[in-house]
Image (cartoon, rainbow, N blue to C red; front, side, top):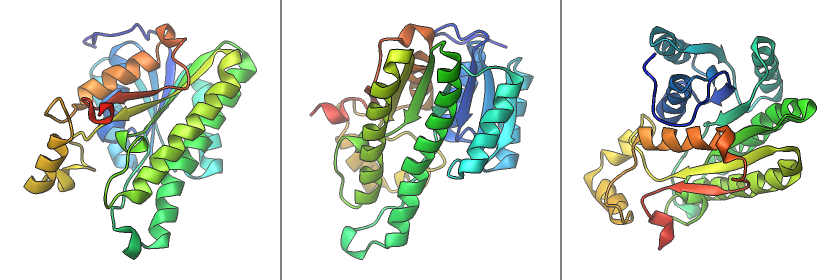
Length: 255
């Protein structure tokens, strides 16, 4: 396949959750273009199959495995299946979601859903992959897709902000536990990117203008920029990037 610019991931086996669309798909395709063997995970089997086909058609190596990242048994099964193909080097956990709403009117069921989707799934996936990496004691790379909302507040998004702040704390703690064994754990924290999840929100001109006004760079991030940052964090060269929240936010969290 046409090689992408970036670190050499040749032969590295990387599991990517949330790989059916958006940032997860872009990262999986970038990893494959850099030589990685990719295991693709998402709930939607049809979308996942399309990503697998696109990578394989381009000359890369990918295997789709539909699974629910909030289900401990499903996570254990998908990691075991991936390990049967080849020992994992790392994982990008790109599962997440948002249900906006004002705090006073917010449904507690929606809060529970966001915590499960964003925080529980992150813990389950990173822990399951880390168990394999630590057993081999050869190091590895783990990364969770967070958000700039994990470092700031935002009206109408208290539940999402709470969940992404929790992801940051979880990852930093895991990094401290596993750093002595050469396993890095980091958060990649992009600003708004136009994806299937954000497109309906960004279709509102007033909201889109308000978002741009908070980004000193004056524009949204691209999926390619986020994928490139993910590739570095999953690379051998990132061995001293540990417990970091790496912003790809055009300066949103810098002021």
